[in-house]
Image (cartoon, rainbow, N blue to C red; front, side, top):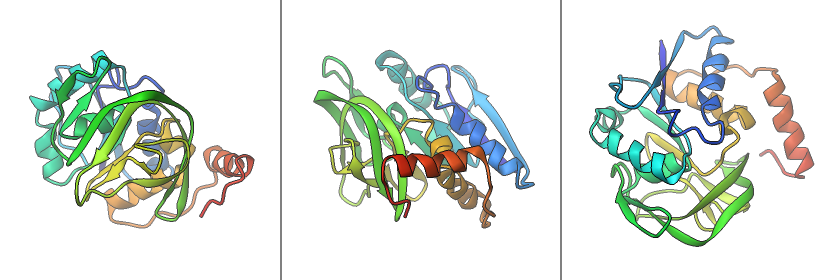
Length: 228
């Protein structure tokens, strides 16, 4: 059984990022894999899971989500090896600190040596990055500039848009995959959803012929991108 948990979609789901959970669950089920999908709300206990999904959110909900997660068992589950796929605000709260409007600095969860400060301009528009030789497409809307600590690898290298700083997008550790790409990113990049399933199941998955896969191909053609 692959256990998929969406964390606080009421707080961290501004740009439809809850769709990441739906896509992941459906791509597992269509391959005959046993999978469950649960949603954790504020005040709920965070259950043990194989993969946690964190989305984007506005400043107030982001701060609240960070506070709630800091007092939950989430960090313990991650340190025990659960995979986290985080987007935008979710990415920022996993680091040591993050800043919001007014440049106020808040403590993150400290699960990665990453710091996010307020940038001088907002990053809005198409985001395209090379991720392990594959092309990731999406869109971004954030005001943060994220700096990675020594030994923390970027999730991808920016080809269009800004991501962390115009060069790197997000970060990746052994069990955290974090990006600034909305979309939802796993719907716009079904190959990435399949990588998540392979990571948590320990098995290779066969290709699927779905509308999402066709739309990904068309988006790459429209943007004149190599899929890798």
